[in-house]
Every structure is written in structure tokens, then in C-alpha cells.
Image 1: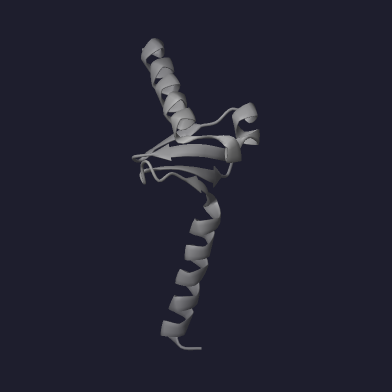
Image 2 (image 1 turned 180 degrees about the vertical axis):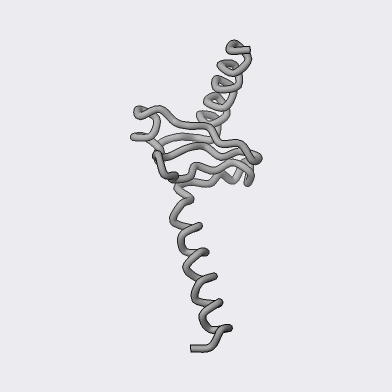
Length: 83
């Protein structure tokens, strides 16, 4: 196996892992997606990750774009109240 062939194999595996991590994407905004992480599903939006509750994680397939926006706003409000 050549070095170049091995490199292509590794890149292919990384792409597959990346695709598996994406649980849901939204046509309304390509920057928003629901991903599967080490500790369960989360919303990723413009470089920031927002953890989902267990109840939300159980219903990931049913979550809409609007649900994700509401979740992000609620998380932002929580952070403001802590400060």
C-alpha cells in the first residue's frame, strides 16, 4: 500500500464519520444542524454547540428549524441570567 493510498483511505473514513455525526440539517439555514456527539445529540450553529435535554434528544427527528432557534434563544437567556 502506498502512502497516497493510505492517505485516501484515512480521508474517506473521516468523511464517513463526519456524515454519520450529522443527524439533521435544515434548508432554512445551512449553518444549523443537529449532530451526534460523545454525550448525545446537540444543536450546532455558527460555531457554537447547544446541548439538548434528554427529552429533546429522544425526539431529534421531530425537531424543526424553529424548535432549534427557540432552544438556542433559551440557552442564550440562561447564560445572560448567570452573569
